[in-house]
Image (tube, rainbow, N blue to C red; front, side, top):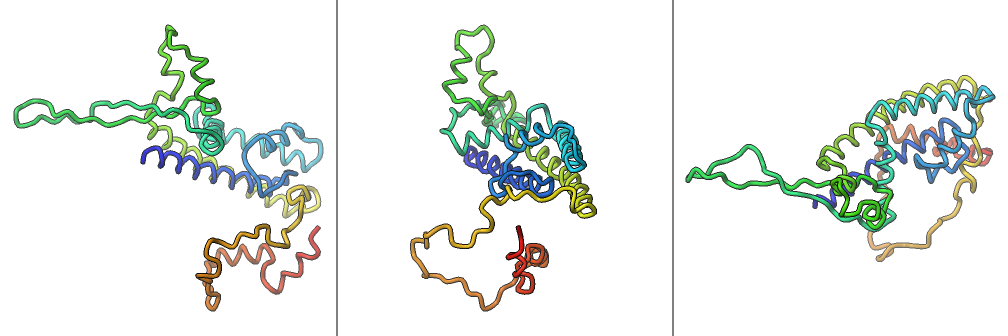
Length: 257
């Protein structure tokens, strides 16, 4: 159960980071597909390429990245974001690393009716120090005959509860502060719509016009969804209007380039 919840939380945090990456790509006008957004190599390569920027638009983009980097550094210890991304990739793309844990005395101490201490313990779970590496690679770099304690190079020397709690706080703070930066850029773009245009590379194939999957389920049409009454939140309706999905605006999709 502990391992299951650790994986679930790591995936949830990474999903939030991927959504943030999508917002960054859209608002900052980064020429990379928005549907496969993640805070990875392509975003870093873009900002590295433009450097300090030469045009007014590039300077706004470079200024955002500078402030965004400062936010990342301010909301957690060195390397926290890369560790979180590596941990998620380990869970999704590779086999599980060996699990590490130990039992420690549970406080406060309790004495039984005979005056002897009742033995109680709780289990500490440890997360890998370098989730980007495989078990074989880690153990290769950590011989058991080493004069230093080899186990300290395998795992983070803290309870997984501390690690995951810290990741939650850092992720929430980063998203909150980055959202403020994105709002500032969005306001600037609304006032200067011609300076920074939206890259067509964000939607390289354009809008999908046909179903991409022939899969119809394992019991097709056994439980049709009724459309006689549809209820949605007002915020969702605002999103529909912004995307020109209402009948009055739907024709605009034919004019988008």
